[in-house]
Amino acid sequence: MVTIWWIRRDLRLKDHPALTAAAKAGAVLPVFIRDACVDNLGAAPKWRLGLGLEHLMQEIQDLGGQVSLRSGDPLTVLSNIAQETGAQSVVWSRLYDAEAIDRDTAVKSGLTDLGLTVQSFEGHLLFEPWTVRTKTDGFYKVYSPFWRSVKDTPIADSLPQPDVDWAAAIDTETLSDWQLGAQMRRGANVVLPYTHVGTQAAEARLQNFIENHAEHYKAKRDFPAENVCSGLSENLTYGEISPRMIWHAGQFVMQSGAAGAEHFLKEVTWREFAYHLLYHQPNLATENFREGWDDFPWQGDSAAAERWRQGRTGVKFVDAAMREMYVTGTMHNRARMIVASYLTKHLMTDWRIGRAWFEDCLIDWDPASNAMGWQWVAGCGPDAAPYFRIFNPDGQSAKFDADNIYLDRWLAENKRKPSETALSYFDAIPKSWSISAQDDYPDPMISLADGRNRALEAYSARSS
Image (cartoon, rainbow, N blue to C red):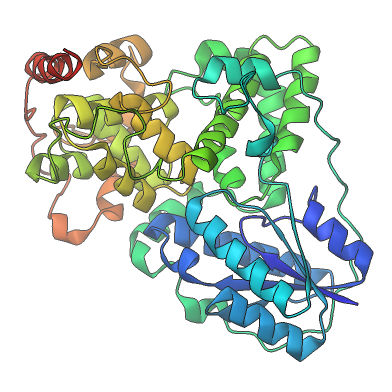
């Protein structure tokens, strides 16, 4: 019997429940479909997805199989492939954003009507969102009780890579013809050296973190110049490593006495919490989570927001963080909070503008974590930072980058000999911005004190 494995954000062969089930049933035909969910991705995520898919395709080819690439409506594509091959079943790994759920529900119903067996499997998360419930049988809206409810939950062992009987190859489109990286333009060559593509790279990252950084993670994770974070968000978002592989490694080193390991596990669980919320509140990425925020006087897009996007606000920590994103495709977590706070509070700009920009620029973009993170900082989200918590970028820089290592790494203007990383920013950004290293560094658009006071006034008026 042939089973179609519909590949999505599960670009791995290890610890893969759907693939394991398919392999036990008979021959496996791996298929990736370029549908609206793929086409709607931002520039950097779509490009990075293409890199991960190319890597997986090579892995499967080395094992004697072939991933078939098709474009179009998934129900139509999968129905046609089933007719071509005589496949009797289809499997996939679950996703939890509204767009994917609506798509998958329609596909499952349509294929079932055609007589196919359809199964979806866990694997993208540790805890299925509907399995974690409050004592009143609701869903958690605050992280701390969510953590307490799941932290001691037994997690199943990771599955080994299955022996797969790959089905005969069928007609396929060509990945290069899809041009998934076209929107990255010249930025792709700048970001590429910073990517860590595939399961082997993800596992090396995990091992490096466990052996060298877990002990100091809690103490040093907020210092953006320190290389103590795992970097695994990039691999998790494309399913190149499973969350339970990470969880078990973190548990092992925690039980071995690493002081920072529990905090690392809390960060893994923060991702779980984000998906818990996205599943139960499907509009998390587009609408204010908390009531009473729809009339908050955020500005729409503006020249100030464009300066923020360009990393030319005149606030060094903010600009350094934005430039880190353009060069590496990622941004340190502390820096993400600071740039989000500056946009939504000092510049009084709608959080959705920042959310959309991150969605376009981050290679580790995640629909749940990105949406929750922006709403949390803005004050309108679940378990949100209180309205009066307005990060002072200069104060944050003095506290977490006292020697200006991070700033020097990413800022080039007005320096006699800027770093190579700082200069790379000018190679990555659109030429239409007309920005060069010879430009003077800009003055701040608004003083931090004035921006804070303006935000506090608006937040206080909302709560009165």
